[in-house]
Image (cartoon, one colour):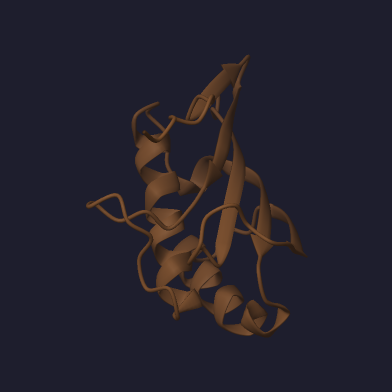
Length: 118
């Protein structure tokens, strides 16, 4: 029997929202496109957008991301898909190479978003 992870998708703290790391889970609960970092990047960012939407926010509210890639050779394709998803918005970002916990996952992204007062 699989044990659900002990985490919350997002936790608010003042005007900030801290999102747990997101993987490229598709609607069926499986990791999408194990051999395609661009597709996985788009799926991860869609998952982040979905969590943000549940809190009345969008990708334009993201102020910082931390990205883990399993292969440094994926950086250029990842960066292109990431930039396309954010458009002209450029959150602060850290990107590192690391193993990930689930087979087939090539990328994980966590984010911090801010509610814009105004």
